[in-house]
Picture (cartoon, helix red, strand yellow):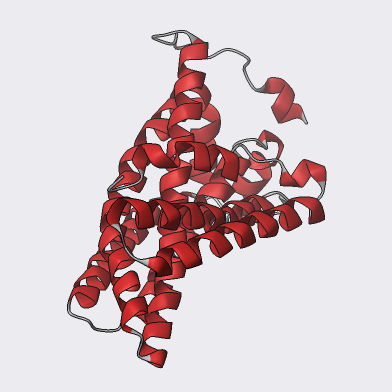
Length: 267
């Protein structure tokens, strides 16, 4: 607890604008970023399932729907990256010393995010290309989802570690090379799982919008509503089955759905 008491209350470098402005911009931009991330994850989940089902059942309608989703994924990734930069910068301005410290403590994983993003981006273009040629891409979609989910876990770990200055010194003494994640924090996995499962809800809403804006047929309509409903139900199960002090998160499907129409490609 000594570290908490010694942590400076004020930043010696003055802010170039009022604190409320930075906090407002942080909330707005990070909410939009969460929507883009959840659209990407849900697109990979639904699109991959459709791609597998189309190959197994030889269903042209599913193949067409999965191809439509696959061609949008690289565009969604653009939003993920571009909407992810502003909230990170605002967080550095507001909580720079805490964020920099936690980033150093998980440095190896934090730096690996750049490589992992490049891998996901490349896989998305491979998926779109194979879908355009009518080739299967289910396993590639699964790999892209796992890598993207790993990035989300790294971010969840770092952003919760910056809130725990009392463990920084112990972590650095244990390993000064940044090879540890956020040990002993019970909030990391629930926060991560809540956001990943929340992507199913956003994905269902995205499918409904996609069916309206691009006239993709009945498959997206018939799938979108059940996906949305199952996502909401699963999220509530996670929230209710987790301790209140663990399940709290800054983003929820309600934020995501409200912001969805703003950045949904093609709407």
